[in-house]
Length: 558
Image 1 (cartoon, helix red, strand yellow):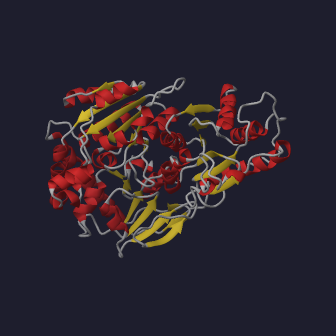
Image 2 (tube, rainbow, N blue to C red; image 1 turned 180 degrees about the vertical axis):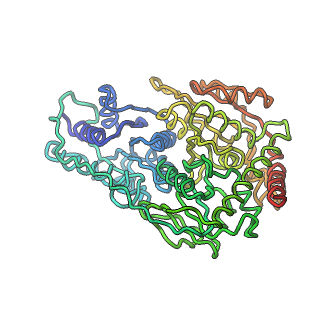
Image 3 (cartoon, rainbow, N blue to C red; image 1 turned 60 degrees about the vertical axis):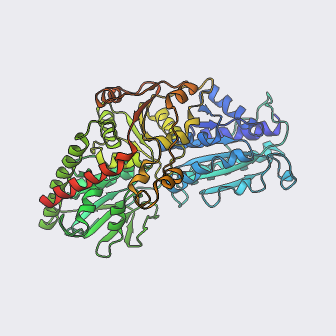
């Protein structure tokens, strides 16, 4: 067996033995040994191989597979191919998603020589955004080196899974290969020498929180479903209101509050909902300014629940970080009265939002979000939501129904949304994606057909308002001259989405009424298709203002 074949075979075998079930590959010459090793493992039924032409889409496909709970590796050749993974690596880093990056490289002696596709800093490209990084030189004596290679893979997998103290996240192995890169028929003897399995830590002992303070449970984005379950269980056990972002894994149950950000905004520290005295925070909150203001208040005690000891605290007010939390005894009178106010306000606010949404007949983002959540709840499908307006519309108008929801909220970028959704659907089954037009266009290469690849059951619900609708809700739209705003902020594009989908071989429908759209959205996902909803960007801000006013009036009247 030639050294490069041996090296790649040992690496892939070690990953599989440590739990890898999916490997995403973008083709290239230098990475060919890894490609052949992965193909051989796939032919043997040991892993599932996914091939993508575009490295950025490959990275986000791997991220989507990982967000669905799988240990995933992504493989690229050297040079700019590796750099195209950086957005997905950054998202995985900030969201805490396990991801193994294998980048092929030229032999070490060629660095700095001007050799083609040789980046001097490739091995350090993702620092400090990876939990572990190793620069592996081209092999010399595979039989002697194999135990060390397995040990490196063991350390990388343990780090990716968060078993080395830093929490889950991406890892990077930069792998040098020398010619020949073509496969050889002979094989190394099967061995596990050097392979190390790191045990999961014991569940942390929960800290018992005091009864008495008027407490909200706040659940932000959390890739690990256990985080959301813990937040929901605490809220229901304690009888405290639950403010849960769509991708928290906690958005459901009797304590969940729907349009909570508008309730916080309507209350604005005036005590209409009972003065909040304590917030117990799970996950990473990112969606709204009212939540940010709540977490920055001097008069609110902030307790962060974090099993790995890391914590979000943009307002610099965290008083305690605990590995787990619970409460004993019955709620005191003040807690009960506080929760009752929130229950009543939540019902009034949800009704107010529905009334405004139903008051118009045109297709609109909040209406689409509500109907997509309803459809997912009805047939048990998964929901993926793009950053920007899509996730905020779900947060605002989608009733808390316990739908499993995924959104890239680590850095809240719109890139890679389609590929992420394809990864989620590949593992978890029928999925709907709610996405805006700019996020859709940003990642349309995820639709590139590759022979031998199976497209998942994914319905892409595209809310197309011809530009950046979220900017209509921000300060820019009110203070910048309209021609300048349109050119450098809103960026209308006028793309014919039907023609674009046809070029990629993706079925496309464009319902024109709410009745037609509701029927299409209710159809369970089967295969890949795009449902395009044309909406009016000029109506985004006035609609949000009407919804905000209606919720505020409902809270004041109560």
